Amino acid sequence: MFDLIVKNATLPDGRTGVDIACAGGKIAAVEPGVTAEAAEVIDAGGLLVSPPFVDPHFHMDATLSLGNPRLNVSGTLLEGIALWGELKPLQSIDEIVERALRYCDLAVAQGIGAIRSHVDVCDDELKGVQALLEVRRQVKGYLDLQLVAFPQDGVLRDPAALENLTRALDMGVDVVGGIPHFERTMRAGAESVRLLCEIAEKRGLMVDMHCDETDDPLSRHIETLAFETQRLGLQGRVTGSHLTSMHSMDNYYVSKLIPLMVEAQVHAIPNPLINIMLQGRHDTYPKRRGQTRVRELRDAGITVGFGADCVMDPWYSLGRADMLDVAHMALHAGQLSSRQDMGWCFDAVTANSAAIIGLDGYGLDKGCAANMVLLQARDPIEAIRLRPARLAVVRAGKVIARSDRQVSELALAGRPSRVDPANYAPMGSDGR
Ligand code: FE2
Image (tube, rainbow, N blue to C red; front, side, top):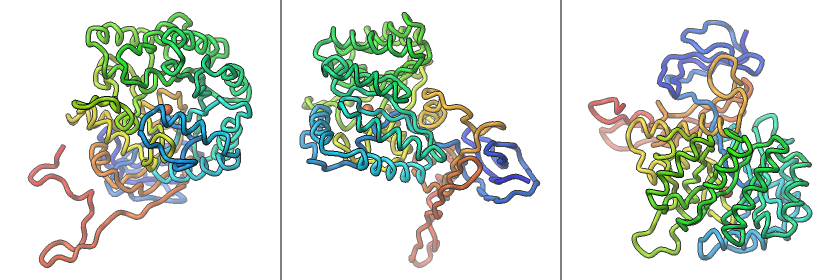
């Protein structure tokens, strides 16, 4: 007797007709033709069942605050940081908790199972930290929330930031963050990277820095991050987020830099929606797009995951907790248009991001956590193309969110009466 069987699923690796049986919160069988009884049976009808989406880079302390106390007029990163500085003293812990919980509701409905959120530690009350530690506790049963101590105003530039970051880690924040390109000088940026990596090494923690989120091709803190990772033996535990300056760097320099990153086993998290929106604001035409060198990083063997970063906050007005929106933008901005590349974009919002944040028991193999999402699409490429309904979201073998199948009624003489987007393959081929 199983708790749940999802029958006739297509898996992201292309297997079809698979039944997934769940018991005791784990996946007990993944094979065709499971016949045992179950408390609940879902017929996937040949549609895609994926492990949950994973957002490896988000700001949950700022989400859903759009318009408070005003809007970002210039659309730049720097006005966003200034605006956030205006909001911070005005908001209460309860308000941050309420906004974050609402966002988590949306995220779960969209099939997100884990989020790494940065939390600003640059306020002496640590309101964001207190709030998100409480949120982490409250959502534990349905969402894995990992927190990064993020010194938004610069760990050296803000005189209280280092002490506040240390306090945040003492309170239970999981990962060490940083923002070297926002420190006062290149030298201070490099010093901040050294300092923060040493803190992570002493505490046995992972590192995830906002790194070189700028169009300045000479912003090269990722080089220092890779160096410190190796010097301190942090290989595999360090991530560079954004890395947008790499878009504008000299090709010769990049030919040296990427192998250094590979040696250090540094991971990369581009944030396509935000990078495309915020970067290139000082350009006329042609306007640079800020997305880092995704293809080159991936081809060199670096683990790349895509993050959502912001939803309705001082930096970004849009967003709906949909990691398929994120993959869709990454695919276009990175011209990742081959079948293989598009399939890989799905990995970048699922398995790759799970690996970067160190999620245990992730996947659809026997013994993994029984967490998954049923999509109204036949395969990962179609999922990115359609960004379809999440028909069922499963956590620990229980359905925690459901959506109706998206179907339109059509009233055209001589034409079909119903349109289901997942039934529209190219004519004359299956499109794969
Ligand atoms: Fe960010």
